[in-house]
Image: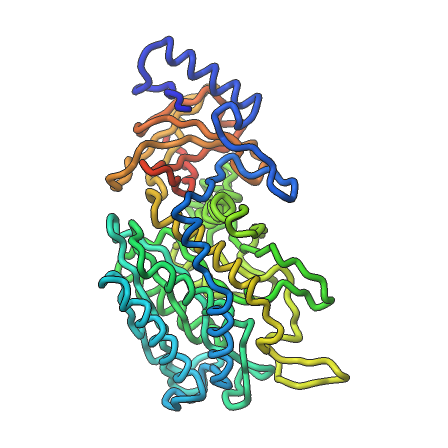
Length: 476
């Protein structure tokens, strides 16, 4: 169901009156007026008005994700004994170097079936002495790039870190199995690379196993800086860190929930941007929050079997992850982490105390759960890679007072854009509730006051996938 917006490109006065009545009816009656799905989810929650149902192509991809392969990856990484950043780099069977070489070989085997679309590199640099790095140390990220077939300049990144640690962050010789933290995240990345390597995403997807996280996010910081130096158009980044178990330290289980941490106030916000944010109340509408909403839109459904619990924080208390260097570079980024952690099975020496087993061992991982986390990642990434990019230059015209809202934006470069949608919600609502299809235009006037609701704009591809929402800034 398509409605013509009011505005300079909207046609006759009769059609403008019809559009006004339709928009106001939708604002009163709810998203169903505009054909937006409103069926309740299995747990009784209503999906967002912007929810996107997985098409058959995506469902087929998700079915290929294999818990058995994920388990094999986790156990193989654990078999290297320790993957500490300061451990051996030239031992073929133990240490971070052996893990690095095995990951690279796995990714190269996937790339061999990609008809040249996927390439694999060892992205290395020597880190000078710094916090938790007592001597110059080579840090190596293993990076597989699946080049897009339509708009390869647009990039999405998914990562896990392959280094590990035990109780002493400087102990590079004792065992540090790192099954949950973070062989689980690396297993997600490798499985995504495997199932996507033979496909043709419209945009570029980067699969990264990064190093040096436990010592201070060194590998991911280097990677983010490299991408920034290349002027890469990274429109989304996810890190998977501690995604191996749904069991909390008290034994309770939540096997169908994954947390997604997404910041509100942007890490890289300038003073000028902060002033605008304060004036319009945009604390809940950063690019990372829009990315998190997109994940719920595309991956919180029966195809993944998961609930995506978006947490409105950059990360947990006293913790940090590999998404943060990307946030520092101004890229939208978010972190997947299991629903409740068991701290006896991360950052611990392997030991038994009073009959209790400590240590980050594979027997405490749930490989079916990790596979579902991989499906959440895959649903979001594949839709991002097939949809148009997030609209740019989205502004809300504020040159005059009034009870209507005029929005303008730039048309995207993608050849398959079918048009755009305006979305809105109450200022107290966490997710978008209403959608209005406005066609292939770059200007729209909606007969609702900009003072009362939040607006956004998203692009629509000809095959149906929608982009993340862009939040407008004022245009005088």
